Amino acid sequence: MRSFLPLLFFNYLIAFASAASDYYERLLLRPLPRSALLASFNFRSNESSASFDQQHFRYFPRSLGQILQHAGTKELHLRFSLGRWDAESWGQQPWDGAREGGTGVELWAWLEALSEEEAFARWLTLTNALSGLFCASLNFIDATKTIRPVMSFQPEGDHHNSSSLHLLHGTLPHEVVCTENLTPFLKLLPCKGKAGISSLLDGHKLFDASWQTMAIDVRPICGQDGTHCVLEMEQTVDMVLDIDRSKRPRDNPIPRPLPIEEIACDTSKHYNAEDTCYPLDKSAEPPWNLTDIFGRSLKGACPLTDEDGEGAKTVCINTPPERIIQANTTGQYVETRLASDTVRCYKLPTGADFDIDLPEQQMTTGLVLASPPLFAARSINGHGQERGSIQAVIRNPSFTDSVEFVYLESLPWFMKPYLHTLQARVDTSPSNPIKETYYRPAVDRHRGTHLELCMAIPPASTLTLTYDFEKAILRYTEYPPDANRGFDVAPAVIRLLSPGSSGKQGVYVRTTSLLLPLPTPDFSMPYNVIILTSTVMALGFGNIFNLLVRRFVGADEVQTMGAGGLQGVLRGRITRLRAKFTTG
Image (tube, rainbow, N blue to C red; front, side):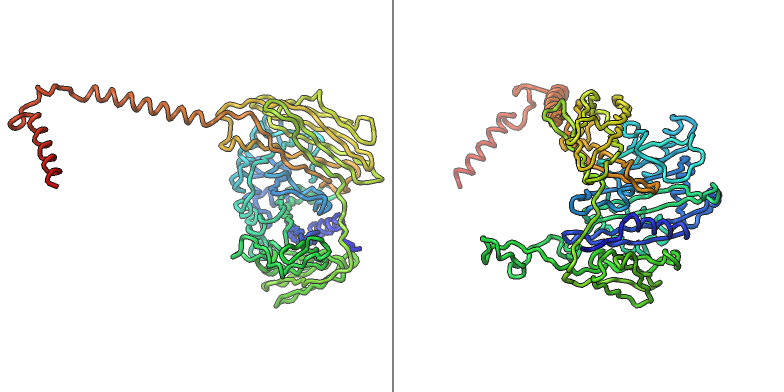
């Protein structure tokens, strides 16, 4: 069996290395089933609190630092996500799901304020400033999309005066993440995508991935005695790439099937023929290199990174020892092995391109992936335009440990749940799994619904959570241009309490977003009314205008024109036309 470095142990190595240097970056590549590849980019920069307060910025970006100071933000967590993590095939999420966000944009922060009103005012200042910085629609996070979680999030930084801190959380599930969000993300880095592992981040490859998320985390880190505090900013990019799709050249954007003679067919199928083929799964690992996967080679090391210790291990590959890996570069590099030779790390050369090449190889070991702590799925049930129900299915794959977690729902105000219909059932136990409930009902056009549940699942059990809701009718000005598509509902956030990671970042699982159909009026009727009204007004105005301007006189009152007046003129023209046609 193939052994892989535990992600938690690898996270500890990254945390230890970043704490000892002012700037640190690392790329972890991990193969996944079905020719998929997980690429995790991690960048960390530290700035002392004294330098930060005095507006002396070296590694920390000034553009973001001034926004945090102006809005009184002590800790910030921002997520841009696209796609869905396939836990059944890919196993546990990277970073235990702590750097993963819901579909679209998700933001939560701890702000220092004396009252809730002041905290919300600073929250609006923060969202509007971040909207301009990251070219995103964060300014649309208003009171209807903001909640104040109680149990779901814990601060990752060291806060000494926590009594004046306020936690606010907002989501935009309909936000489309694209390259205009990646460019500001790269500008926050010291090397700005020109050198180091950030030179591999190409928008065409990143947003062509099956799943990707960009995370920004800012938190204060202090020593054990509460002194020597630094402000740490961590930027993370995680994406799952399809090796075969990434290797397709750009001049062939449409995937075309190979000729049948080039496809390895399963001849054991009874329908196998000259024109019928069932593709045979390849047991060999596909060949790939960084240039094929990311569309460009790595432009050497970032000069600002730590050249000694763990910070020197910049590019790491999590593969079995038998996998052949060739480094291609004209500079000097250093290769080290970690965790029983299952992880190979490379110190990048400075000023020279670096690439790694993995040829096609027949492997004798299997792929073993860590199982996620929970499997979660959520869906909308029911029919009709008035009522519906939500069903969340959460499964505990462990046969020995029970799991305690917090389930968070942030619903829009036009989706009104009935709390008395809330039911939680476990297939292996008749007892109620809900231990604690926090519920804040919605107020029309002022705030959404906030629901938090503390629950526990026994080993090898499945929990089913259901509740009914009612759909509100919106004003016609509140519908978006694509009203018939439906309205996006933010994903549910699940935070594991036990067993969880020992670090402050926690273990999280997020469901997919939902698409809620609402009663939608026939928006073609206003156009019909406009057209009919315009026609009636045109006819009425034309007739009235003619009556006011035109002068009507009798034929005998017309002034004499020639010998016979008007009648003579008309008679002469008719005679000439008749003669012309008769002659022809």
